[in-house]
Image 1 (cartoon, rainbow, N blue to C red):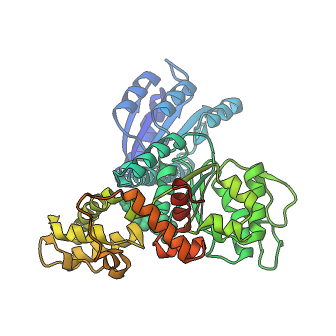
Image 2: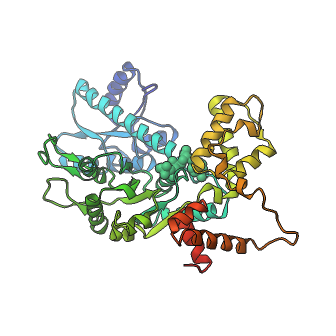
Length: 454
Ligand SMILES: Nc1ncnc2c1ncn2[C@@H]1O[C@H](COP(=O)(O)OP(=O)(O)OP(=O)(O)O)[C@@H](O)[C@H]1O
Ligand SMILES: [Mg+2]
């Protein structure tokens, strides 16, 4: 640690002096005070890595000083110095968050080992704190870009659920719409932000491994279980578990997850006792989950249990205003990353971005912009800087012959007519009709409901 700073609060001058000698010899900078009041005065003026605190001070007790230090700084390590045999004091001090205590008289060499451990602890605590602060900053609400009505609704929702206990949230949306990002945003903007965020992709592991990852196992529970291992639900206690691609979870595990959601308790594999934890579950899928339920691939009871608070992120093509905003956001991000100085996006290029259907949603837009920022020869991005996946995907080709009638047209009627035609042509097969209209089945059903066609 560069510039380790230690504070000694001790009324006996000889002890103060010898500690200071030793700490200075170790290369620490060192301040000292003969009373609690003076010590706290110093403490408010500087950041210390360690405090050596005498229990019996002329003006106040060490416990009171400790209490005040804790109020000011959660991380700093405090070593309390007590007269021999004062066990109750020591216990009380540890409860109040003292790191350790030493009985006087002490051997300074032995003390130094405790000091080293204490300093290491402070360092780790501060690292964790810095990391969390960085995460909070990285996943602040402002990093979720968007100004379309659905995105604004989403911001309100995130704010209202952030601190609402441990309610389960179900995140739906096509691939690349931002479910991962949203999950982290919810966590880092909630009162759980200082606790773990644990992310597990339900498709990445075999059924047995996934179960043991989630619930942990006892020693000998299965052949490879050489030692006991806590599961992610335990490790995330107080925090958030993000179950990504929950739609692909094997049926046997779905039943166990359901039990966990209902009872907030589970057993390790091979375990006999229930373990109780407090975690918020965020579950996400890009599957058509209602279809999976209809096809008996996803348990209906689990679906209802997850479906308490559901956030559906609309596909990018339905959030017109966001395309430009996101594009500019990514340009500035990649300018920084690749040390480029792209100043803008040409009008025709923006139109190109708007007319494309973005099957890969924000992820695809992000990749498109990244490539353009790297390869563009100019400071303003033009249409030819964008290589778009399947341009034919957009309806523009089929619509080329379509002309707006001189008197205009009722767009909702056009929509209703096209939905009707698609349903007729497919003998009311909703999946096929949705495909014809470049919609997900949910989106089609939404429109059918709106149009009274269900
Ligand atoms: N509103 C947004 N603002 C800024 N970046 C976004 C936004 N939405 C998505 N992104 C970015 O787009 C990329 C894809 O998002 P993300 O990984 O969260 O999608 P996803 O919904 O989890 O997709 P999948 O279903 O494939 O897992 C990420 O790089 C993410 O940071
Ligand atoms: Mg994802």
